[in-house]
Structures are given as structure tokens and as C-alpha cells.
Length: 168
Image 1 (cartoon, rainbow, N blue to C red):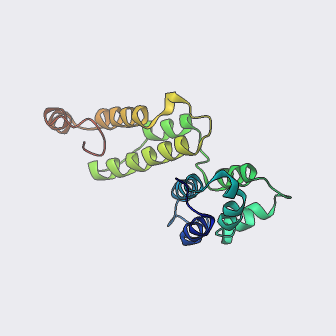
Image 2 (spheres, rainbow, N blue to C red):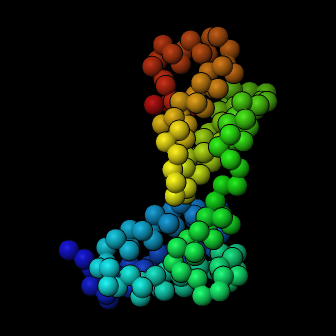
Image 3 (cartoon, rainbow, N blue to C red):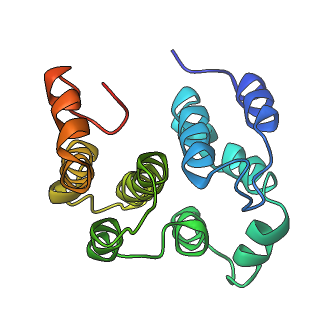
């Protein structure tokens, strides 16, 4: 059952504005947008989309202002281009493999950041390449993490069945 137009408008207006800042990530905004759009009937999508576009502010609004009479797909593509992860998957992998740190905590932090970028890039890419799925990214980063640790710490992780950088 779909929401009425009034309820859909209320939901769309309740979303946080997206300005392109790091406080409200593009992935979160797009997830919220897709949720609202999925809750209303297709006949109301154009109306809801216009409200959602009005939730753009700052850098995000400036980015789409460059488009001449954009379609919804062009708006989303422009937001992905401007606020998505710019590095390639291979570039991110190389960054992970070349992390130089002084401590285990610093290594963990840097690799976690790179993993987050890889997974964000995957979620924003409409042609999701299965080779870079979050599970594969997690495995890759954890292998790099293990190979960077001393034998004692590596042994502790393996003995405690820790198989991800998040400790799960």
C-alpha cells in the first residue's frame, strides 16, 4: 500500500537537507530519497521529486544549477559525480596496500577509512561491479591489515576468529 500524496510530501519535507557536507553523506541522502519514493505511488513521483530537489542546499544546489532542465536521473548522476568517491577501486586498493603507520590503531583507522570509501563507491555506482562488493572489499582490507601486523597480533586475531577489520 502506497502513501497518499499528502503523507509522501510530509515524508519528503522531513528529510534532512543535503548540502554536500560530510555530516549527511550522499549515500544516506540517496537511501532516504529512495525510501520516500518507494513509499508513494508512481503517479506521485514527479511531485515528490520536486520537493526532494528543494531539499538540496549549498554546494549540492550549486552543482545541479549547472544542469539545464535536468531529469531526475541527471540530478542523481550529478550528485554522485560531485559528492561521490573520486578515486577508482584500484586506486583505493593501492592506498590501502601502501599505508605507512606508526601504530596498530593508526593502521586500523586508515584502513577502515579506505574500506568505507570503497563501500561508498560501490553503493553509489549504478553498474555495481561484483568484484568490488562490500564483502570482497572487507576481505581485501582485512588481508592487508593482517599482513601489516606483527605475528603476535596476527595470531591473536586468528585465534579469536576475527575475520574483518570491524572485529566481527
